[in-house]
Length: 139
Ligand code: 5GP
Ligand code: ZN
Image 1 (tube, protein in one colour):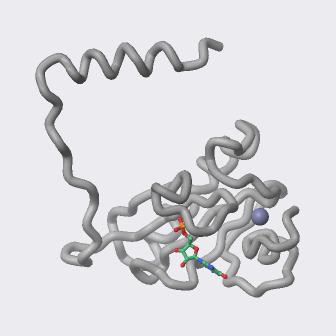
Image 2 (cartoon, rainbow, N blue to C red; image 1 turned 45 degrees about the vertical axis):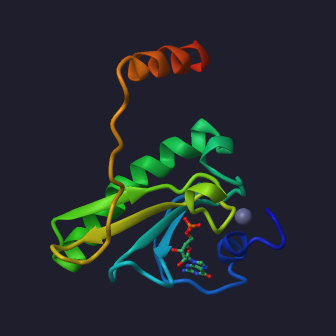
């Protein structure tokens, strides 16, 4: 636990939250400033700064619980689609340095814009694929 981390404080009950589900390892609650109502966060009960440093044990539970909460959020909001988003690192938009999965119910015309793609020049895609392959841990 990190004493100055707001999500650790939520886990410990030192800050309030609207809890929707919990297991021994993870907690799901509503985002204070939702993109759309029902926007939920799923977090590990242990402090990890971001997804990259979260153990596989916690990540497995996070993804399984996110699926379950996603279904519940859709049922509750009448939405038929949601984004499951992780901002991994400050440059990616992560503000709270405690791993969290966003579940954002979506509606036609709700105004949330996703990324737009940029084309590769000839050969660049294959070169990048080769480079990344070299860094993928072989288990
Ligand atoms: P990030 O940008 O780090 O991926 O997202 C952090 C999210 O946490 C934001 O969507 C923000 O609204 C939410 N948030 C920040 N502080 C609190 C809080 O104290 N309580 C709740 N429920 N959500 C919070
Ligand atoms: Zn924390």
